[in-house]
Length: 308
Image (cartoon, rainbow, N blue to C red):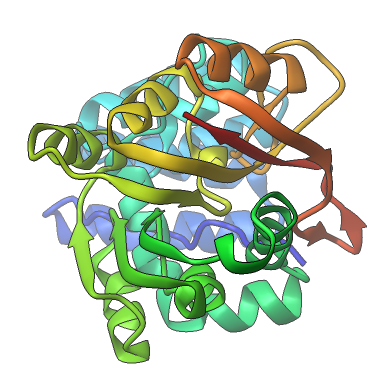
C-alpha cells in the first residue's frame, strides 16, 4: 500500500470545460491515453488557465512517454495555480526539469487535509508506520531513568498526534504545529496537546525564537521528508532548543538529497551530518531504521538524535 495524494480538482468556472475534463479523466482511467490527451487539449482551448486540466495533461503525456510535453503542461499547471496545490513543481523536479526546492505549502496543506479522516488507520495498519516508537526508543536510550522527563516538547508537523501520544507521558507541556487544519482537528479530539498551532514550521520556529521560547525536546516524526535541504530547519530549531532534537528521514545510498517517485525527499546520512554541523548541533545517534513500508517493502530511513 502507498499513501498516495488524493485527486484534487480546481474547477475552471466553465461548465463545459469541467465536464470534458471529467470525461478525459475517465478515458485515462480506462487506458485510452491518446484520447484523454486530445480531449484535455480541447478543454484547455476553452479554459486556458484551468490548472487541474494542465496537471492532468502533464500526467497523461508522461504516461505516453512525452517528457517534453509533460514538462510544458506541469509548468502551465504551476503558473495557473500559484499555490500549486497539485504539486506540479515536484513533478518538474522529478522529471529533471527544475532544481530541488522546498515543497509548495499549498500542496502539502491540500495533501494532508485530504488524508486527515483516515490518516491514522492508513499509516498504522496499511504502512506499518512506527516513527514515533523508534524515536521514543532513541530518546530513551540517550536519556535513561529520571532524565526521561521533559518540561516542554515541541512536535513539528504534529499531524493527528501519533507522535504526541507517544511522548505525552514524558512531558509537562506539549506543543504541536502543522500546516493542515484538518489534521489539527483530528489531533484536538485526542486531548494530548497543551497548545496546537496551524502554521508552517520555519515561520513558527522564527516566531518562537523571537518570543524567547525554549523546548527541552524538539520532535519531527515523518516530517522532514517534505523538506529538501535540512540546513534551514535545523538552524531554525537551534535558537529554541534547550536539550535534544529527534527526527526521522527517509534515506538512500548517496551523498545529497533526492525526490523519490512517492514525492517524498530522501536525505543521505552525509547530508544529515552536514546539516547538523552547520546548525551547531552535536550528533548523539544516527541509526538506520525503516519507519514505514510501501507495497510490503521497508523504506530505508534514519533515526537521528542531536543536542545543542
